Length: 532
Image (cartoon, rainbow, N blue to C red):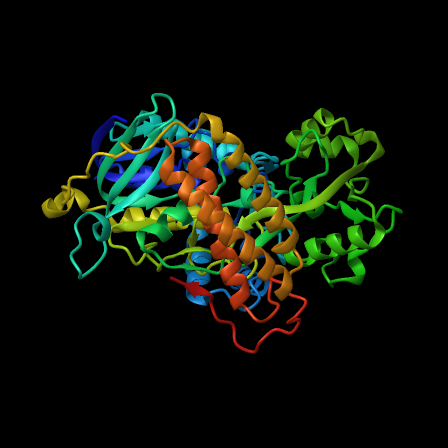
């Protein structure tokens, strides 16, 4: 297999909001290469419906309220200094996006701010119900026009290249770039980079039911772990309460903003149930709503619950949520009945690669931003619309840290030449594709059934045993056969599944998203689950 070599100052793996916004803040002093697993727009960010949470109405809102709401949703696990850092910097990033041309929805002359679960005030700026797409379009246009930014689309990262593997120093482990797989030419591209940034998103595809697109297979967490990084809090996979229940559209999210505008949840008999569960009723934090829906579904035997949009009104719903309305129509749902069938689905990982306030990992010259990272912002349960906020704030901050990169001569050249990729002992896997497909399906079903919304020691132990066996089989398969995206993805999924189970087994309490029937009480002190 041929190896093509490239060099850059900053290698950004991932082309969502965090990767693009970071690139635009690095490119004035660095040569930036952005790697996208598919097309440039094919990321979780593109599908983000809700918006960006920030204090934009100082008459009715404040940073202290936003901080309080974030800490409350995070169930004691948030790092308060990080929460304050992100919240205080949030409004400036919204104004920057407005300056760049993101067409946020307005109410007369002011921004239209919506209310989402866990928030005490209206503070979510949005572009109708396609905020992520609108932000991405603006960022992509600016990035395409920047002379210091190049794109590699249809390239999947295979692994990071670190000194412990290539040139051990026995002092510190450092990253020198990555191996990429060209899905068009089937060649390997070895990229030497002075600094590498993981902006690869999450791993919702680890579960049978998810709101995430096909690309969310945990590649960043898996590569970081293999490179020597610490990971934390993977037991906190957030399940979004309202994913469209439809065999035609298996991964379509119904934004929390729908409930923020007045919609309520009903059981199959047409009865409300959230007002008996939490003081905020249908706008309670996501972990609480998801568990209530799951309990309602299992106790009734009905496959879903319903989102009643009658309080919004059909015309207003179609105007305010055009993407959701069109998706419902594609799925054959009659919106005139004013009821949308919904179920919980894996949505967002609050854990990931451990980073500090500067987004740095414990491996030198390797950073992580966004869902792939565990920054301390989200704790045990992410507050709605804080994810895009985190992407923007950390990307700008990392850009500020590196703004004088061009003046540092010793930092500009990678110190190690990356060896050619060695595939000399591998054979074609065409006849064995059924193995990867079966393993993928088994892992996702097992994670949903045993490491899902409700957990127990016995379920986790069963998952641990089988996933460990599967991972060993997949590793053997990986080293025996030629590279394919399917092999790489199932390898990454199996590793992240194993790490998630390890984290879940370590937490002997119920907190936030993590509910275990063997330890229903919450411990007095919240401690991060850090593993290496």
